[in-house]
Length: 467
Image (cartoon, rainbow, N blue to C red):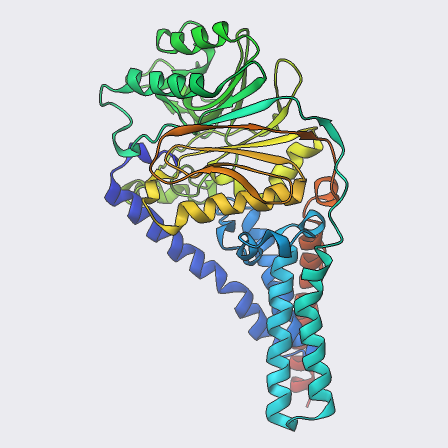
């Protein structure tokens, strides 16, 4: 992830990650504490199921607060087995989390029953129920593949992977070379049917004033490329900023020496030969890109361990990008945003028919992180029944069809470009229309269960005092 990490050293980055992992582990203890509390006052199978409700409510909370970290959502585990989870178009990843939790509660109950009664008829009935719970969702996947409504399949999309070392990307004197490399790789693949070229997160290696895009001399080669190819739209990332005369938000920083304020953005930019469309990353990485308001007092510590006290400013509205020939309405997902199914569903509700993910996963090195991040994009394809075009600086760049299958990909640590004819589908799934409805329902049940537990505790205490 680009994630403002070029502002800090590698030691600070890993320190920031350790801090996030530690904080995330503490938060993950909460559903288990609530489960323990509930089992003291609510007995039977309902008490066993309480961990299911509390965990799903925790995951929903962890998607929707300033310290969100949905990377470890249980339902993400099936990203490499899309054939099992075609029903995610109804439930999203929370359905997978529910499947895992119920299966574990059921087998736990079966093992307790075996220790208590042995191989009784009731034991075998519960084994059968557990097996049904395991395999019915997989079988359902063969029946939920909808007929997709096609808008067109005429145009192609090109994704570019420049393979630039993120640790030497800025301030090395190679910025113009990087830009020329992006243009060169794009030119090798475009043709008369190319509607969209996609570059990765912060591909433009220069902090850019978003209100002077036309006048910025550094961007002249991009404008020349688009004028030469007037039918092409370019989606790229950059680190943008804007200047203000007053402090317009908590993210606005003062210029050194005074004279106004500025905001920094992790930006997705859609350009054609005549105009620019702008979206600012909204789901920011806690600590690295943004410090939640309620933790403002910890800003010095976050900066010391690789985070940013001021942070990026972010968009508060959904922006769907429209190509100039109306071929695609694009969801511009920047890096970390691609793991938020419910958030990206909002773009689909506004008419998006193609998901474009721009990212820089080079900070992880050759680890499992960039592989997991790519595979999570397969879940977004299933939830929306839209194609996904993914441009990653160092890999993995790829195309993913609406059923979660990888059609083309560029591996790790190589440069190149891919071209793919990408159909635009306008099918709305249940998940697109309603978002993460399952999590909302279960969160309500978890709240009711917690209230019941509190009432039981108060009642027990009252009876104890009366006796």
